[in-house]
Image 1 (cartoon, one colour):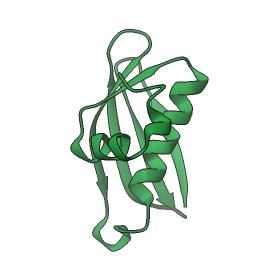
Image 2: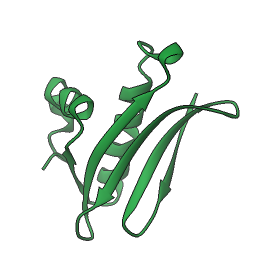
Image 3: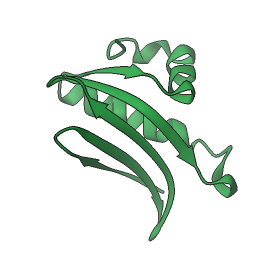
Image 4: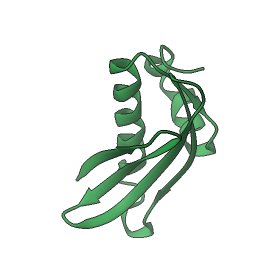
Length: 93
């Protein structure tokens, strides 16, 4: 499993893949130059319960730290991960 990022000027996506198959997606919008609003997360039913969603969140946190950004977890799933992981508080807005 691999998580790749596709970043655009106004929005972007973290995509989880298994080989050539897309198995999960997490979308975000930019608010200003250094603020991500994660608004949607989905993992295919056959891959749920395997930590795929959390791996996408971890990749977003890694990106935010490297690029001095903050994350607003608008998506309920991502908000739950942030609530359970105080080690992500440094990038939470």
